[in-house]
Length: 77
Image (cartoon, rainbow, N blue to C red; front, side):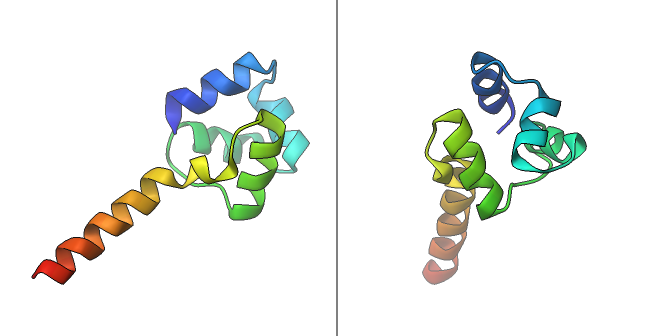
């Protein structure tokens, strides 16, 4: 997620702390989303999507693609 999440958050005028408070999580948890160390839960992804005006599925797009690629490789073996 890293840079795009930070850019969207800043463009909407939120700090990490204010956005974390708005969705009901710790600032350190939110920070780990931006750093790419954690993925938000579906519930939190939906909250973030609503607040930041982005589709909530954007938080999982790369994970879905990776999962699909792994399954495709397994099938081809």
